[in-house]
Image 1 (cartoon, rainbow, N blue to C red):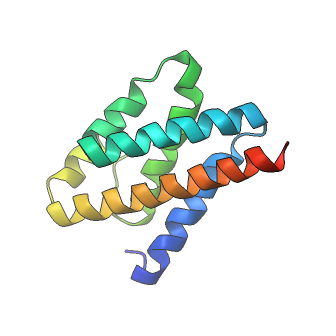
Image 2: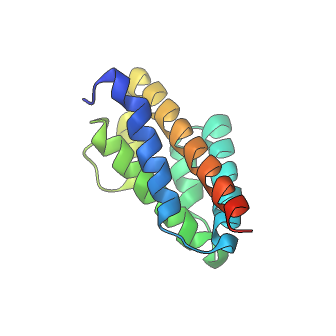
Length: 127
């Protein structure tokens, strides 16, 4: 597993890489919005609901949700919490262990917060 002191750095790097997938100010606004909603689902409903919610997004939000889903899975793989390539199966496996579940939620929360702040900064910077 990644060393404990590198977990926040790993979350930050992957969170920032979410935002790097987009270039337009309008994209940053939409990404900030969907990141906020995703964070809310993760906190209130849990890991499996988070991935199901990301999978359920319609055309307008789909490209943002897919990047967040893929980067979330990348974070979980990089921290050795799962080897699964499918987000739903990864969530199911992780959810069978309370320590892994709590760590995964904490890491994903941090990743989303970093993505939100980065998107907000880029919105303001492109005025």
